[in-house]
Image (tube, rainbow, N blue to C red; front, side):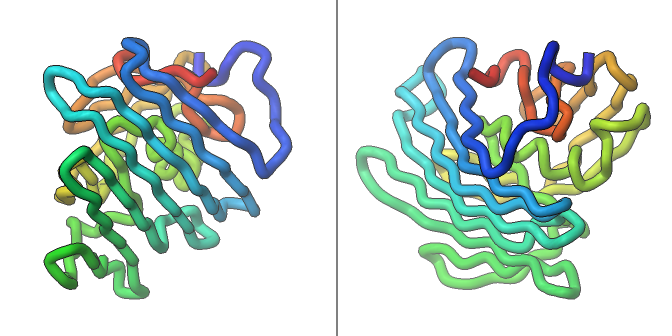
Length: 197
């Protein structure tokens, strides 16, 4: 099903929290909504696994009135270092990236959204922007895809297929699964990644 059992409209602002199924990560975000505009401040804390070192990542996100990402700032800490990156989309849909190496401009194949690996929160951006949580349809969206804890960014395509009440099929660089969202388009269950608590 698309929406969580018994999940109705919630009051905003709200704190949304997810934990990974293997209990190695937790994410919590304070989310403010105003129409399609989203402002969020969140943190991902991850224990060391065979694939990744322990890390902590905090983010600040602001979208425009359509729900497209305006700016994202990320701070990532691992035992050896702290790093920051900032992405800002201009009126020509070009992205200004500022990090420890300086500034660069990228098109990211026309991306309007940012996605962050390990984060169920960021999938809500294209779902809400396109209204996919309210209709049965298929779409492919370009995103600026941020890998943690490395803080590398590359263009990626994510395919979504909404079944109108039976979940949303998602195919991304790291997953092929069916997710469940609430009435507001935020992830409730992302098999293999995390569930909301």
